[in-house]
Image (cartoon, rainbow, N blue to C red; front, side, top):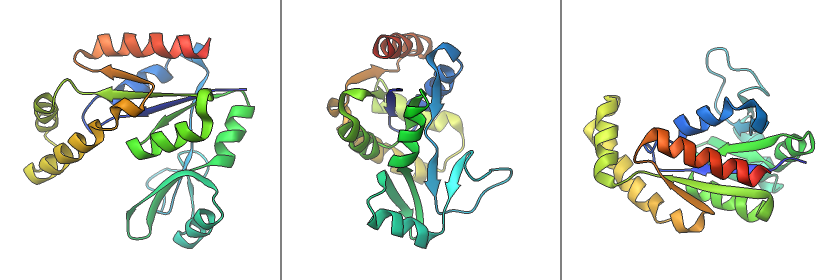
Length: 187
């Protein structure tokens, strides 16, 4: 039976970089949780590979049936969520399921699975450093950056609800610390 690793963080904290790096360690037997979305596939995305693609009505029906561990309506009728049944299938297959989710979703998954899950919050060293990183990406307008920083300040209030907090001041140090935490939990 597998275990669960939940990663949450404000945008720009390096969470996705750390998660992608962890995925390269084959001995950890990590597998991404495959989420559902009500948006259409993009490019070469395939149903059951990157996402399970549902219509908004199918998604709402599954919400009513309490089939999701967590879900979010990002825009009107644009849903993303994690099915309990899918996660349980992956766990029964012996996979260690990894989640890259928002703070509320992370807290919900941890609550559902308890000690079978480890929740890790990747924290930027400061809001000022987060601003520097977001501006350095060069992908967002100043307004988007301000929105992300406001959201980040809110998300950082959730850090104490996670099992472990890793401050990503130096990426290589944060990777090593995260790997040590994950290995100990999976032993």
